[in-house]
Image (cartoon, rainbow over all chains, first blue to last red; front, side):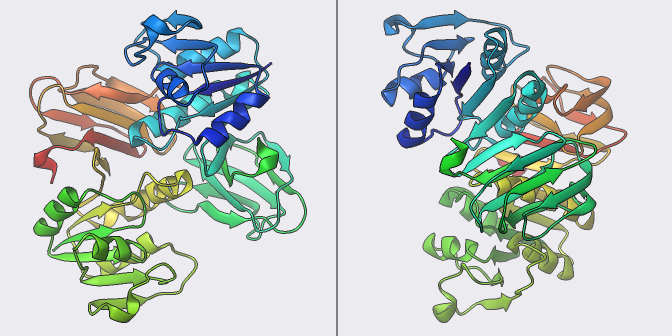
Length: 209
Length: 209
């Protein structure tokens, strides 16, 4: 099962929300994300959260799950639901961009939930963002923006193929060496690493949807 | 000397730009940030960068520093200038918010340049963001939002005073335990830690300007 989650960060374009909605089996809004979904004409199957932000609870006829626990944020609640539904792929919109503390918290949540799905990715209108497995391959057009970030502070043993500025068994370390603003060369991209949590961001492309 | 830098991320409100401009001795725009500054009616003293984004070079009568080096981004160039001018305090606007890869890259730059100034902080209309020294104190109003993020992946030995959800010699680790959405209690805030890079974000308040 492929699940789409809309969190309460920056609003996606209706083009992006519509494209992902079409491809996913189920659409879950995290609390205030439900307001965005309804406003944009894409009623969610489920709204989950402490429901302190969702303002349409009275006239919403989908599934409503109230989870008041203050130990988890609304995105964590939605991902917990995706996990209990045995989702294989989860696409998340609205997890980044609005507030810096929410963006960083949600990157921590991304890391926390990544092991439970085949693919867990954040989407916004510019970027596709995910944590990489130890050995990762993807076909992208030549000249396509690719950025890497060591989410664990340091990531070691990075080997890349198909990038303009290659890494050959090198580390990335926050505050010392980073891998932003790389781009694809000819051929498929392959990125391997031996330790740490490596965040991958690439410009959105049709094949990533 | 206190220097204000405007980078090319999300535009600040003119109220925030004006307040910081007034308090700083010198105003440096990083490349495309110069367009924002001029548009908002605050001509910078200096525009620095590879100048591929600054579109007013012809009719700008301030200092123009063209540095085409592709190893550093425009914010790094502006911070390098602040360093060479022996700035003590540097306030940076427009470093976060627009693109997730630029935001993360600039947090890496924040870590890289933090040792060279007494205070280096990112400002946007919602947050004041900086890396904490091992022992940090600040007076904030009660009930004020405070978030912590382990920029080095893991930060150990955190002891807080004056926060509603205190940490008592505990670690924060990305993907496991985070410190976002805390808030101030009565009395001043004190945050100590023994290792790692701890990012501090708090809601903007007049005393932080």
